[in-house]
Image (cartoon, rainbow, N blue to C red; front, side, top):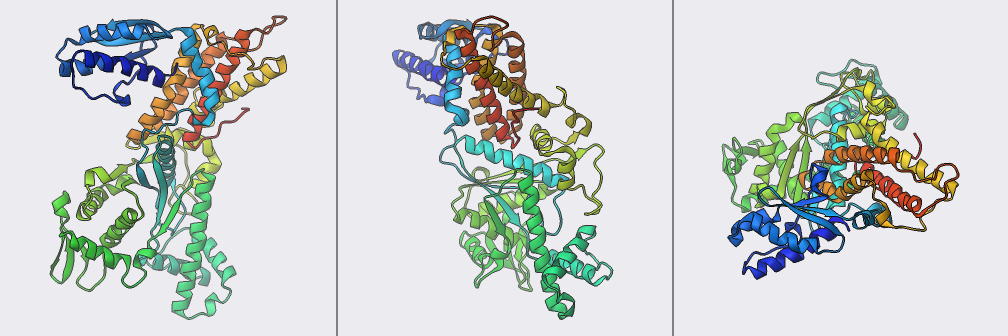
Amino acid sequence: MTPAELSLRILDIVTAVVARRGGEVSLGPDDVRLERPKNREHGDWASNIAMKLAKPLGVNPRELATELAEGISALDGVASVDVAGPGFINVTLDAAAAGELARSIVEQGESYGRSEALRGQVINLEFVSANPTGPLHIGHTRWAALGDSIGRVLRAAGAQVANEFYINDAGSQMDKFGASILAAAKGEPMPEGGYPGLYIADLAKVVLEREPRLLQLDDDAALAAARELGYEQQLAEVRESLARFNVEFDVWFSERELHAGDPSAIDTAVERLREQGHVFDEDDAIWVRTTDFGDDKDRVIRRGNGVYTYFAADAAYYLSKTDRGFDHKIYLLGADHHGYVHRIKAIAGAAGDDPERDVEVLIGQLVSINGAKLSKRAGNIIELDDLQAWLGTDALRYSLGRYPADSPLTLDPEVLQRRTNDNPVFYVQYAHARTHQVAKNAAASGVDRSVFDAGLLDHETESVLLGVLAEFPRIVRQSAELREPHRVARYAEELAGAFHRWYDNCRVTPLGDEEIADVHRTRLWLNDASGQVLRNALDLLGVSAPERM
């Protein structure tokens, strides 16, 4: 019996008791949530439904819990029910009912843990969005790992999600970028405000290969060629870096699209905000009254000289997301972008949306890695490519996904490179590799899954392992709802620990001349179920599940 099945059966009992008591409480599948007790002696599952309903029904919670316990104890597969404290209901399943989960997981495969909890939500998830004027650095590395994992858990919970990268490819920084490349191509000093780093010289070589006549062009044409060809090459390198980091984007949105056309998307955005009643003219400029929505000051959207501000592009970009059908927008931003939160929420409010419902801004804190060296190629930054070559994708993805976005983080490369149990990613991946080795040894010994007798999974470590496996759907749903994929990583470590302890106590292959029995065949199901859930969890973190370590 899975937790979801038990929850539905308890819901039927609760509904009947409420009706019998004349209550008018409306109940749904999410109202009866089961939690694993911290102390396993208190049972397999616990519910506080009696305490939630006691006040609406005007009854003592412990009295209500006792009444519900009578009905729950009669359910097939329930070994015992106890009422604890002010009205907690603790449920213990018999071995057969608990063990049935192993077969269910194997049969569900990759879909185990997925749900429809967020079905109907259409989400735009924007993260990284680095300027295309240089390589990705250590900060982008964290946002890439977190953003991609958030997208994965959201999809696993049934949401429709588009990962989006906003390419800030318009404005003066692009001209400075082009001028820097052109100066390198000419062998001239870097212009004031230009981009340092050997990567500029590398880009200059690529530009000269693609446009051998570069140095013969007039100044404007040469600058345009250096800028555009350098931009294409740098953006391609960013894409390749992210792909190697196992991060994929559904949309690469160019800021230039907002400036194109007559009227442009920015022109149209200003008029749309004016129609909502939040735009006013003052001092020859056009303003948005963002203070109506909690901003610390009103924002200029077009200056008196007719030039649009960055705020205008932000507004047009926000509206484009709405026009593309995204009813919810999530922005994952760096620690230096706190000021952007009020601005984007003000844009949402000015556009007629609910800033609290339709927009979500997650601020990630800084990350450092002991011993990481500044990139010789890129100058004063630590590059993603260098980190990946040094520590590996799996170690980086797992370690960055293992902590909440809002916690400053320092990683120890010595730990991440160890092949020992104090390295969390090794610990979890080794558990998965061990499940594969167990299955391989079982096949060699003639143990197969031709028999499944859930009642044979009665060892204490099997009860604990099954309880952890049962938690995975709840962990995934909770990670999606809270935008906290680190919960999956911590869960994977708990599962790995439970599996290792089970492995130490329960054999799948017989010893010596011992004959193969149904308990061995049944345990193979549990082994394979554990491997499947470890794979599913690692996949949500963008981390591989190796078969050998």
